[in-house]
Length: 374
Ligand SMILES: Cc1ncc(COP(=O)(O)O)c(C=O)c1O
Image (tube, rainbow, N blue to C red; front, side, top):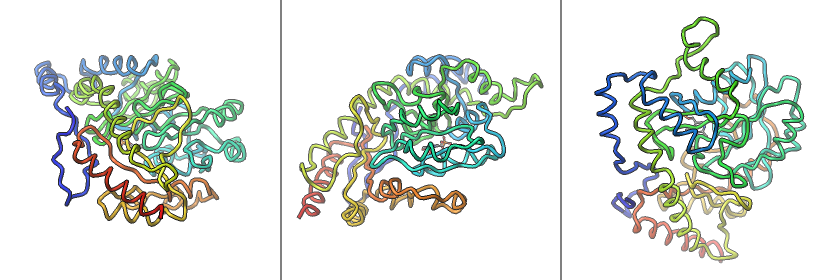
């Protein structure tokens, strides 16, 4: 089922992944025949149970986007106007916007050198009486081992949630990202490993928190006791999610194989290495992420962009959160995050890339590493 994209060396490598047909049409036909297409459709509880089963959590709550998942989790943790939420400087704006939606203030913390974990010393410094939550971010599906920050936050009674929107199947110390802390928030937008078009879900083992999220995202179940919003996922999207969840393990395996093929061409001692992660950790390869010494990074970014493989710094103008106009008031010194954002290169390794495409990318990487080494 791999390699369904035709390779064309004159076009950039397509980083948008569409899975092969996985029985969605049949499931959608069944959903249409049943008649209920809303968030009250019978597929919803099945989808939620299957998500909880796949990840091994007590509860999974389907919602209509990753943004909704983050917002609902923050609201359920009592992040109210005037509260503060710690977020790493590596966060894209989509991670931090739900904090603004709560009327709260993002407090930006640096990461540890060369990694995505929050710097525990910076977390300690930036905790205040107003800190109501913190967000761990396994960006690009790479592990963010926030064990040290979590201990500091736990001592202060501050819940940690995960923005695992890109990290379906990523593991930290042998456990799935999104199940490591109080709640895990996922997106199922088209670009994600589990794609339903738009959509998302929240995982938690905390039944009380799950119930609060459930009531909030379902307009308080119209009982009039608590305030809520309509963040329900539509039935047909849950039906698609159910089909595609069954393929997630296969997809993870193929992404890892592609990543290992590319990593194998990098010369030992050369300028390009994989973004490091710990023993027992495992990226899901949403992207393969390479890194290089700071003085070589600009030339490598330019060469990759010229080859049709633009890194996020070129393609999305990816840079620390406080460089974005709506977050400049939260600017703070984050040298580690500055270095990481400037010297990381993201490459697609999704299952639809053919052997020829992966081979072509491998050739570009080998050339580039050899040229930069001399
Ligand atoms: C890291 C991260 N957080 C949050 C989101 C928001 O998810 P959604 O687009 O489903 O609202 C995304 C999706 O792009 C993401 O990649």
